[in-house]
Image 1 (spheres, helix red, strand yellow):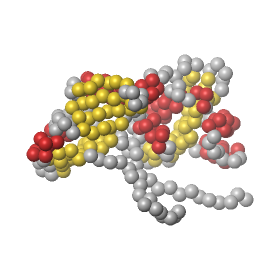
Image 2 (cartoon, one colour; image 1 turned 90 degrees about the vertical axis):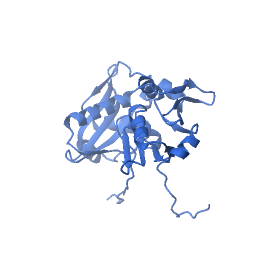
Image 3 (tube, rainbow, N blue to C red; image 1 turned 45 degrees about the vertical axis):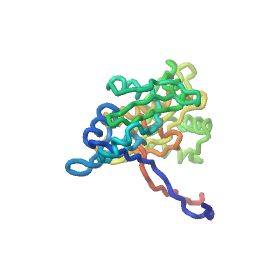
Image 4 (cartoon, rainbow, N blue to C red; image 1 turned 30 degrees about the horizontal axis):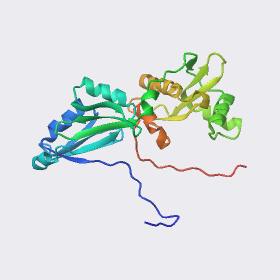
Length: 276
């Protein structure tokens, strides 16, 4: 299909397989209690349709005993990060693991569960993710609850190639808007090697902004430690029922999902004004 330069393109959010099952209610309880999917819904009294979800994975179930019997042995493939954590959960919950966790020659790590209806569920992740999940933040780094200084924020932005306000007055306004902030400091050099801001009205909305880690310290759990501090502050001090948002590149979505963030549709508008 060819389109003009200005033609709109469809935007896909996710795909949801629909599995024929003998009993929708029992299936959903299994996927919730044994496989660990936290979100569930049903339709009908008694339920004849329903589904479960977990971050970006969505599965629906339709009650059709005859088709369910004929469909046994079919399979679905679900990609996941930090696969070892999920594997340990499924071991603990006594899921029927028919193929154990294994690094495959095609660069994936996977294992297979036969679920309650006889479907094979393949959980898979990039093989290198297993090593990353074991990384530990260096003991010389400490997370401090404070707003970064203007120059500290500028240094980090330059290091990662991020854009920042052109002058110090605008930068000061950005930093002062934070209701909470943290910096990651290298105690040996005294240098700030990471920072993260939380802005908002402290009543109904918060926004995670400018999570930055110097390239020399990326992949060492520094960003994870800073996000944990933001989450702890929100849990202890955030307004009840407030919405917490952020904007992240697609490649960073799995990182933020571990802190409870989920994908959502949104709309954006940038204010363009010439500088005087």
